[in-house]
Image 1 (cartoon, rainbow, N blue to C red):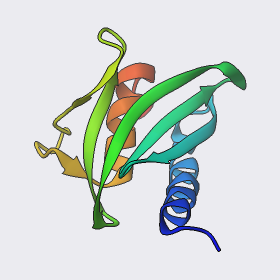
Image 2: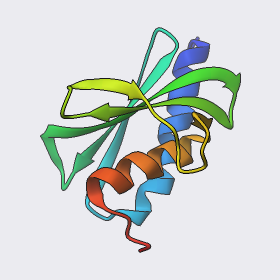
Image 3: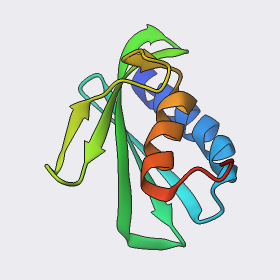
Length: 109
C-alpha cells in the first residue's frame, strides 16, 4: 500500500503537469517528497541531465495552502519566499507559476 506522502506527491505531480502546459519547453515535472517537503523540478526540452530546480513546498495539511521556498541558483539552496500574492504560502500552482515565471519567463505577458 502506498504511503500518504507517495499519494500526495503523485497527485501534485499530476496537478502540476497539467498546469505546466503553459510552458511548452517543459517536457516533464518531477516531484519528490522528503521530510515534510515536496521538491519540484522541471525537465526542459527533454534534457534529463539539466533539470531545472524550481521550488520546495512545505506541507501544511491543506491541499491549497503550501509553504513556498524558491531554489536560488546564486546560493544553490532553497530560500523561503513571498509569492506575488504577498503571502509566504499558497497553492502549488501559485508557487509553480512564481518559480517558472522567474526562470523561464511568463508566457502570458
